Image (cartoon, rainbow, N blue to C red):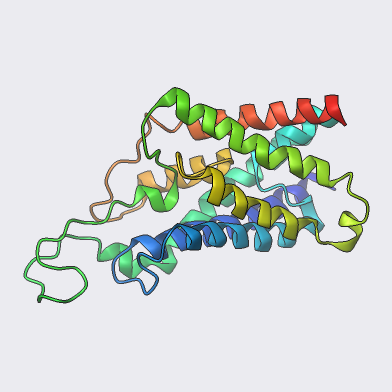
Length: 253
């Protein structure tokens, strides 16, 4: 794979991932969305489908990593580091692009994210209703802010992603059948349902950092803080988890 193919593939695939993922979070979170308050299961499956669409699209060009933790885990296992920087640049650019696209899809809902004054009773957004916080649409927010616990959660959840991804390569016939991406997508859904409760399961530094940067600069009314004090955890945790998964895979398999 050429550097150009890898970069383009990761930009497109990661943008699709974030478009679906931030999109489902916007759909569930924002007022005046038909999917509002449809719940965590919908979010978990939305992110899983984002992995499915993004990875299948990117696979012919770059292999469809879409995640610096996956790229790092593969590099730690194989010792091949030469193209890691290309993957990371593509993933970050794609994550930021996907966040902008999700914002544009829900532009009217974001623009309506203001305190409703004088709204008729019984309508969506009653009188004096507070604006909806928007950071959780783009990036993760811990349910209980405890840096040590949050970091541990992200490390373990990322190992639960990257170690199976590496092991799938040993499962005879998966690669040839083309079903690997589908299995990984279901794995992401499972991680969201089982391990996502404490932190929102970033498990992907680009997925969290790229959209957080975009959130900082987007002209969203009453958008609230981008919470940069927490931002290091969904970056460091997945990177540590990805590296540990690569080491464990190399040692055990």
